[in-house]
Amino acid sequence: DAKTTQPPSMDCAEGRAANLPCNHSTISGNEYVYWYRQIHSQGPQYIIHGLKNNETNEMASLIITEDRKSSTLILPHATLRDTAVYYCIVRVGAGNNRKLIWGLGTSLAVNP
Amino acid sequence: EAQVTQNPRYLITVTGKKLTVTCSQNMNHEYMSWYRQDPGLGLRQIYYSMNVEVTDKGDVPEGYKVSRKEKRNFPLILESPSPNQTSLYFCASSSKPGTAYEQYFGPGTRLTVT
Image (cartoon, rainbow over the protein chains, first blue to last red):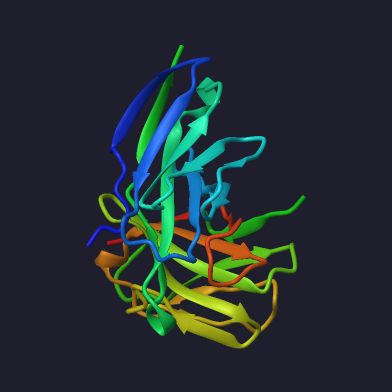
């Protein structure tokens, strides 16, 4: 039972913004949304996280809709090194049944 | 340099031969966990540890054991490996337990059980 939905793949031209969407309609009101990426089969790398306000760091921006049912990760100026699988992660459940759900991710190809 | 190390990086073994995958972190993190990654299934948590001598099952613990005798080490033990444990394994650590906040992942161990 998928708790996050991401497009399986996306393309982006080098230098352009990459906008990666994620649906997480079952997220609880006080749970964060996290984004990671994985280059080839290396260990995943943390990118950013947010609760309800938009967030920005040196890697990316995160836009969360007002109803918190979806979010978008934005890489403002994608480079070839941004080619990776991007994961949107939420924590679902309550009490001892809470667990992190890693989706299958979006494979982003940045093209020259 | 802050890092999580895993050994071995690649391992081919036979059914039933006990093996241990080591994991070590140098960030003094309390929280450590093990994941396996399989095509079409994403990352799934096997076991996690909130601190020394405190471990708990994740989503797919069957066939695995762990121990946390020291803060920096969190080995994954397969007492009797089977072919369905062929997978890519990642160890991770974090200063903030129970969330996905800034987990640091190791480079991965690719295990093949024949």
